[in-house]
Image (tube, rainbow, N blue to C red; front, side, top):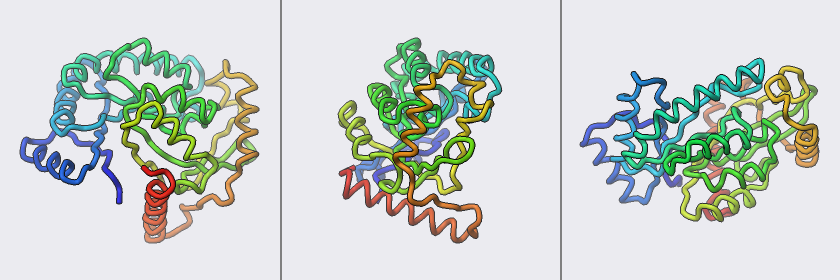
Length: 283
């Protein structure tokens, strides 16, 4: 019942491109690619070949990330974050002429790496019609951005979407953040879908639902604040207030299950999400 896929296409020959493109067209399916940005000049040929394949297939967009890991886990200081941001900017500057030549939209995900003001500054600096956003509807909350304001800010740049619900609950060092079937979590998915559709009426959204134990967001720890010293107490207060006002009834504990039961749970989660998207959101 899904309407498409987001997948690493790599480099496909003409026969495989034709087969995939025709299969998708016959069924009105959407295809998103996934690509790593070019690391340096020596990596441009690889990136160009993958973007050429994406263009030939006719993707909606190609999703990428430009900074490693979760900010509060990967980095020890704001200086380290700024260094990673500078490297990210260089990789995207290398990508600009290639995606522009092939007219393929490169969609950079908000990946718990930059806060929304930092990511918007990146887009504005590049000022390229083919560099935009994979809007992940849950990630920015982990960096204490406003849960709906972040999506409002990113929506004009949206090329594709990681559409997800999240279950929230407090724990001693901050809050838990868990993927949950659409409509069963703490966020208003109808409101989120409306924000994105208002900005980009034709956008096709990709379900992201990782069946795993809840992630810990230690926003009350010193390590967390080492990478975000400029963030206000108002943001922390708003975030914790939201968690307290929208606690999850259940959080899925996955690691203790057998592999067979994990697969069954993932299948059930995806089926429930597709049903909710179709019946409640008309997606």
